[in-house]
Length: 30
Image (tube, rainbow, N blue to C red; front, side):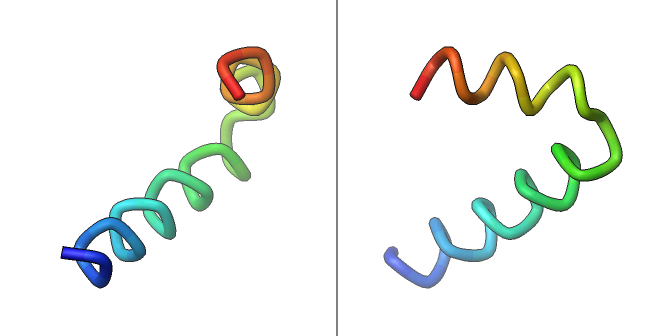
């Protein structure tokens, strides 16, 4: 399960790198 979350997290961060506005949203959620 942890590995699944890591893979999903890696995909999420890759998405954030290409979409700076998502980075701001993610930071706000965190």
